[in-house]
Image (cartoon, helix red, strand yellow):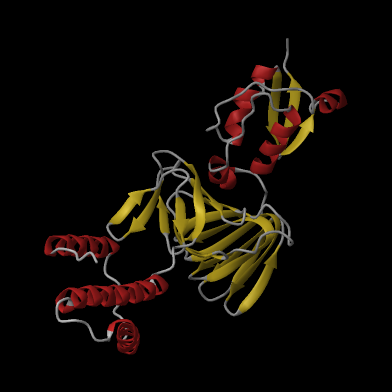
Length: 343
């Protein structure tokens, strides 16, 4: 029988201490569970080793038996630790786009730090954008939705179906109808906005302490002041702290949507059909595409484009993509008119 030396025992003990140290402090074992662990260990030790032994081997065997008993206790405690350990944080979103200078920060125990592209953000994460005009960001939500963040905004990722807007504005694109991913609610101190298969922007307006919701497509439900209000495409709802509501018309394009366009995912136009590219531009800008003639419209599905920098916003990319393909464009009254460039 092999009996470990004192040095070997100390070496093993040191290794165990280092392992437990790296694991960090754990919750204290409840007294009733600790008593149960001791009872199991004592019963198992008595069953296996509490029998007569010769005096000659008594010291060595006792040390060996006690070491095994201690190991059994450690194993049982380890099993309890494994079951009681905190569950890993659920990743709710991934950083999909960043504007100028990184633009997005993540609050932590040691203060705010810059976010990085493709970083996963867990439930409870609080993020903020800078005040600069280009300080926008976009998050890819776990169920396929897109959440874009305006400059000077702050929000908390609460759960798979809830965001808390603390300041500024967010734009939500569910990408699906009612049969798509679960609806996301945007909670604010003045009310909660629930998407119903739509694209909309929610903003807390500090100057008059109101909540403003603009619907670009689909429908939303605004819950404020103990009441529920529905809004459809082209509508804007404004609610104050007393629950008073104003309903007005709003265009799906224009300066109020420019920050949303700057946070849009890029489009690789190299070799892409003109029709697919213009469909993306229309989706992101709210502009309706109109071709100069029916022939150009027929050719749009086969006409391949030359590339442009992917970091350009949809509206900015028009000036880079279309002239390179001998095309021109005009924006008038919400329409994007596509024409052949003059020789």
